[in-house]
Length: 276
Image (cartoon, rainbow, N blue to C red; front, side):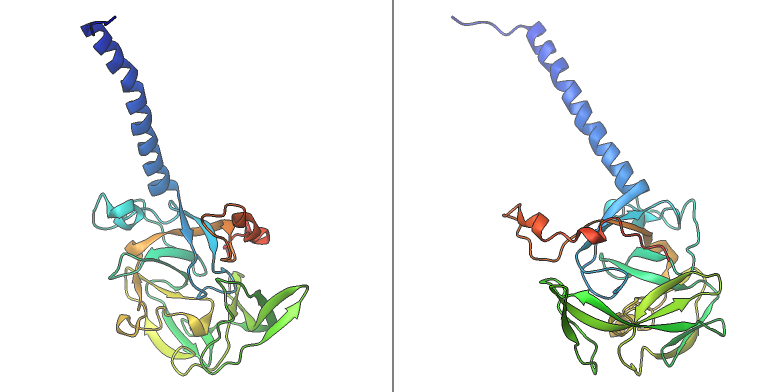
């Protein structure tokens, strides 16, 4: 027995298909709005921000604090010049930005704002002629794992110890404290003839001076692009402010073995915020 397909049947099929199409279109628009204007995920691939950020941290980046430029949007679309709803970062903010000259997103800490004069004197920050207090907090132990080997700066000696059933890599840490009370920990392992003796330089208009917290293992604004560094970074390249970690893995997981996603989890880092 056969049945003829009528125009009514075709119309009904179209009406049944349209809600599905509309659902996926609205879902895509909602995801674009969320990703572009509110929050976006970011993962930490290197140790340049130790001890604040660990390799394998997955965090949310908040998009609204500094406004929006083309770098705020996936694939830099829509492309436009400048920044709308612009807001200025604060010294000490941890920001994700699009590295000038590439499509890579990096993360560093804001040290200098437009018009500031920045120097590093024997490893100590100097902002606008004022030496920023740098207090020793002895040593910190960073767990050694598949994605976090005990990497040390040239001239430093690796210190690997066993404690509490964990293998730890020990680094000397210091607390830097701004005059307004904002503070954070940095790792400073050796006297680096370039990074620990820098400037002074004045941050030009429309730019920020960025540094990594792992001072001897961070190519940042102290180094020029031809050296692999950044130089001062245009504010328009800032994607957003680092929020908090929603996942963290030690690198031992296998994509094809779902149970290892949880054995590799570092639960103590989930929810960790990055505000100074």
